[in-house]
Picture 1: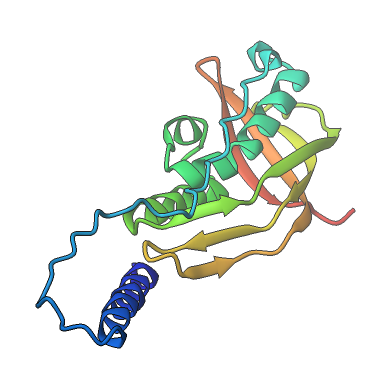
Picture 2: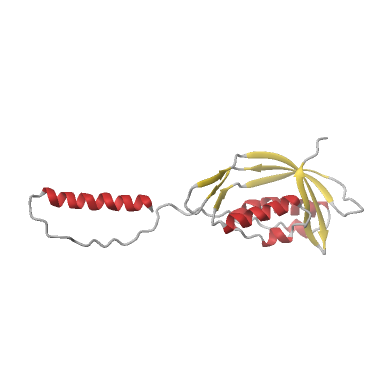
Length: 190
């Protein structure tokens, strides 16, 4: 907005200056009507929501792995759009990572900030036997995340992340036939 106003002031000054240099009498004050123009800066396109894998319909280790990867890869979509419904539905109340992510996504949305980047790819490293007592499938997952940037409503950068590669232990189980992320935490050292 400031750049647009400065541009019009410079243009108006040039028009007045040219009239003053001609040596002819000024015709008096004139009114210039300027139609507002759209900003030339393109709005960032939010990432597409990942496609839900068919393997999530399974109730075994393969279904658990598909659900965990889907959940993780939803992260940048949730942060950029504020659409937390499915992420929240797949989050166990005790999942600290889930609670923190939902809180931050809501904060970004409520502050009218914009999240860009941060795309994630994940790969399953190892799946472990389902815990007979809790029904939890522990999974080791490697995550690669691109740089993420958060800007405020005025366009100022308030956060810049760095590309990251991390190793996590994901604990996931089913409740009423739906996958639920119990926790995502740094992978324990072997």
